[in-house]
Image 1 (tube, rainbow, N blue to C red):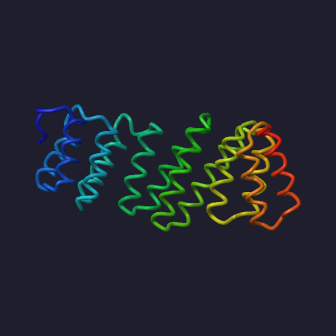
Image 2 (tube, helix red, strand yellow):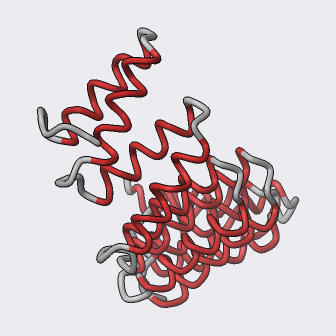
Image 3 (cartoon, rainbow, N blue to C red):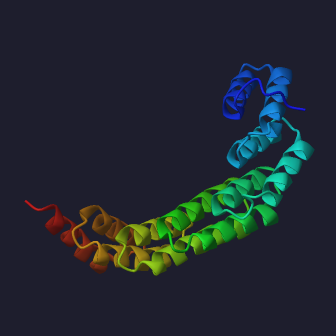
Length: 218
């Protein structure tokens, strides 16, 4: 049973420091205390689960995640996305990606948050080499961009993700759209030109290079 000697967040930070020294036994004790503290917030418990994962305490980490998801905050988008990322750390790819995708859908009225979740999902999918997770991340970014057609930023971020994956034809289309919407942004115009050069579409590239120069002004 956890003691009430310290606030859960403080205890968890101490555990993280001890784990880096490393004083693993002491770190493990404090991590478990933070996770099981009666005043521990869901986010703190999930951070503890992530730390336990790194210590090889997979069963304990899964128990904590399950308890958080079954608790009063278990349906909150932020909690579900954080739980999903910890599950991905545990290589429980299908369940983790599902939770993050659900959180992204729940944030559909907050497209910048949804796009950020998609970007995180894409990055982690590339890190663990999980194509399905990568595709879920891209799809979340696409939906966010399409939900706000007047946002050049969301379209630009989606285009950048496509370019990173080597999907240059799609990236060019999305970046040109971003440049058209952000009609004063020279940087986005330059990026559209750069992708078009990569596709050897030089005539279009020159148009956007000239447009970038015009936007920069004298």
